[in-house]
Length: 111
Image 1 (cartoon, rainbow, N blue to C red):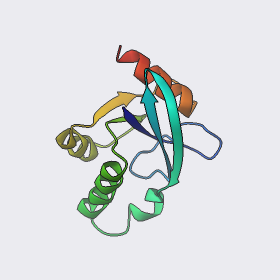
Image 2: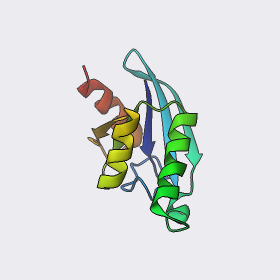
Image 3: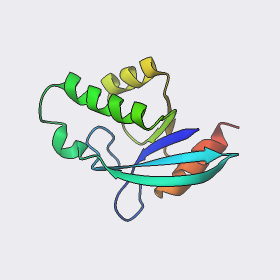
């Protein structure tokens, strides 16, 4: 399972998805985080550069390149929810203000 979550530099959950400056991608094996990589995606700046469709394509490209199967997020617009649904990516709610713990709790909720 590969989970993406928007994060702040201090390890908290970033409240925005489509405007997140950073994302973490976590590989989860047997319910535990096996790998955690943070990426400066710059979606906060890129969001308003071009069309909504171009931005959604940018997000989709990132998710596909990283093999993301689930997203843990506090807020996401309807258009992006629709896009992720078409990709078969499950959206899970944030249950902690701390990003790593939020991923662990999201995984535990699937059991």
